Length: 443
Image (cartoon, rainbow, N blue to C red; front, top):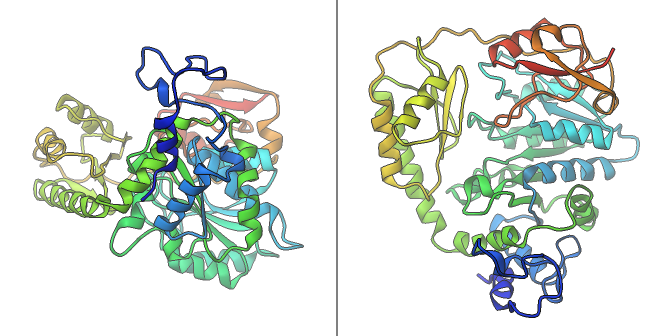
């Protein structure tokens, strides 16, 4: 497969650079010669018609999309862009409403403020054991859509979520399409799912728009991501996708990141599927080994291993144990330890995990997770996020109106959303996750 962006960067001369960037292709880092700006022949990300457009076409062919567009600012940029597209092209009479599973990334909340739409929440039907998870069934979605006076501009789900739970995208898409609305998928952690056999990628299961953080699971530099449009969406979506991305992106996208997305195409078209298959097999073996040693593994996507902390330990304790053994986890909280792997992880990496964790003889910790925080909506997300705010100790936030969502990344899933009154459920979750400071509106 061609690599037009990388080929251009390799061929661009170091001398005679009377343009940005300031390092002029030389410097102490060693990568400056490939870091350029939009010079003649280099194309321009948001007006792409040359080498970048060719490279994005290669990516679209690999992912089987109607169109694929690059982002150098992660899925955060793509999330905002696909919400913009859904709202801009919604049918006449459709309200500016997005129906979303509550475990959204905070970039969704930022998009709600910038685009001034109303989020309506899908809550877990049978409870959940984590802020990160919000399982939604087709039956629950059907009930939620029937209860609305008009279809929303789109339904939005996160799959996989931070613990690796996969939604039944096929079933959810069928319900959405029966109600005349779109299904949008935050697939930030699942770009690799396309290259399993069979594919588990949201586009192949019926999602209309989808974002992938290429850098999370593929060999791509940090910030590299995709906005995918299915073949079923109207042409108007494809025609305005670049302007949607430009609305939320820098006018100076990183060519190093673009080059990594470009080179990744060649990797995906050659040996990657076989290497992925082997990586999945190794993860299955590790899961079986740990289960046999008494650890409780949770259902997750194939490249993730999620362990539930046993009685007497937290996921943070397990992360420290792993760290002492020479490994670093993706995420840990009171209840879970999450490991993310790719084909770039060696068998030795997984052996370190096994050796560091060792045997577990403690029973599973009793369920004690607080209920979700269904806060009273007082203001719109936009009104609250743009209002004067102050930061207060979490224990003093009860009854106040949430300003900016106060969450760390990972997992960047808000406990209280901007414009909601902080109730006892939110206060309990702040305490549970160790949130000490909360942004609230000034009184």
